Picture 1 (cartoon, rainbow, N blue to C red):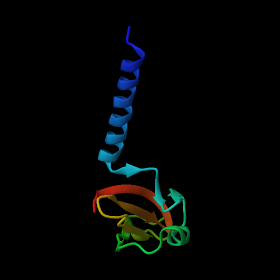
Picture 2: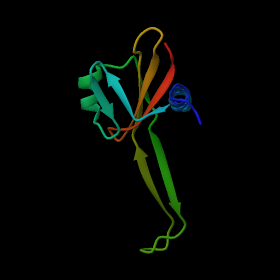
Picture 3: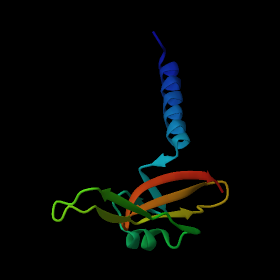
Length: 118
């Protein structure tokens, strides 16, 4: 049977390992901007309001072309083009802290990642 002190130590180690693994994976459910919190589903306007301008904005938009060899209307091949608007904003949260990376898909926060240390 483990003593209370050993149970607390084991629990502390497990909590630290869980935290380390989530940081090592590079993904986060939310990001703090001062005392405010942004999460998946937030708009670009809300992120700008709470976090201000990022240090870097990258346009990662994609054009997807779906080709069809047969069109039911006239028998000719057709092409459907879809654009996916993706932006990646990087925030420097201070010396020695991890960069915050916010990925928007069609103007809404799709993912929040933890970057390298600043």
